[in-house]
Image 1 (cartoon, rainbow, N blue to C red):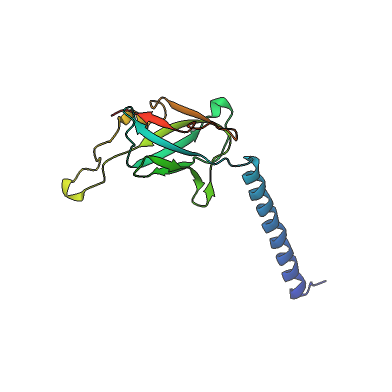
Image 2 (cartoon, one colour):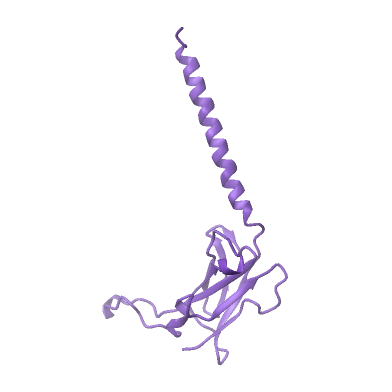
Length: 153
């Protein structure tokens, strides 16, 4: 017995719909697995209280303290030292848990100086999560200043 072409196409379409729905469900489940996002806003200053005028703050999930987040939230430091974390370009905040923090802050790249590594505004140790010495717990009950950091040159 031969199956009509229309019937074969129907099975292919039905199979495609089932697979697409399954992938959508898995994607939603993975995103929801991390729970709610918590807004993270902070300030980076030098020891003398002067704000760090530029750079990036990066929160790396600390698996050794149970943080299994799939995101590495980061925030751009503004001219007054303030930053706001984004888990993705459209997803604000971070999942609750412990993070190792790195801060990258260099002079702007100037092509005429032909340096691939512009001078750092802060000590280079802050650019490596193993040497930065910075860690913080993101919580929905954060105290004022909990996400503020002081750095040295």
